[in-house]
Length: 433
Figure 1 (cartoon, rainbow, N blue to C red):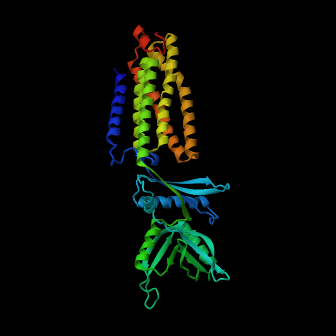
Figure 2: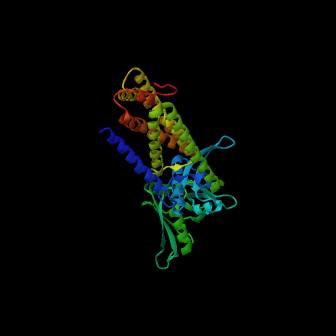
Figure 3: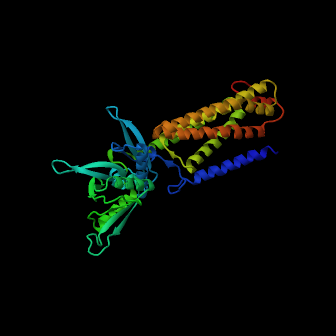
């Protein structure tokens, strides 16, 4: 009787979790399954980052770029965006830094570009002189929008001053940016420091002295409306490096719906065929394994929903594959059980020994797959990462269901003594005893 209680607890918990999974998948539910760009439809924008003027901490600048664009996308309310960095090889073999922006649900490419908006590029350059044609010669500095903490619109004061009541933009840098700004101004007193916004000079003040404190003032000829726009755009995110849109594409919602339908159908067929094989070949243990497989699917879907994991087509493929892998541990266990039964052990004792003998092989096999998933996720592109994440989660869940749930359910119903009926139910393949 005591063995039935844990089994009932598992079944009740699985039923409750199943109910939760089914009832939290409405179109406005925050815990619905989140579909990736290839399934939900949407837009992909690919930007190329120009890091030619970055001499130190190039990766830090690129990370800041990703964070700025991510903030910009979120401000405009695009659902479930994905913003990531990626390296690609040019025709001549040169490695290019690219920014991939995926916007699920946005199928109008132009609308996606407009939603992302024009994010300003803020740069500070020293004027080193002029050319023969009278054009200024600019020397880039490391100070860019990457180091901007926030921008604020103020109005100049002072009676008789040319800045009286004129809008000015006050920039506040991060601690690192403040130190860099102070260093630049202290080493170039007497020179002009041009402030560029989107490639245009908006102010070129002369450095009178070192400026500590991490603040700078832009005194361009702004109207109040223009000043507000500059402040708003800078606070939304000034780019640390220039970017250029190199490609864009849309994935239709019809194609995404077809992929989802095909993935669901393949999952059902995969589950059904695995279940039929297990029941046909392993009989009662196969039926228990199928029940454990149902629990496995419920737990995996719950993790995908509530973690949450953005499900892509490659993720569905990983889920289908993991269904087959989930029964691998059960096969090892049942084969070990069969050996013990042939050696004359009673069913309950055969199950205990079988699980014990199969554990090392199950552990090593699953840990190997988990390590492979981690490496794929760490080194792969977004397509590979989607597969690796779902497959890795599936392997972890299958390890739990095989060792815990299958064992508990099987030991609950197995008798202490062997009989002709139990001999048939615990046989496998074409054997009848």
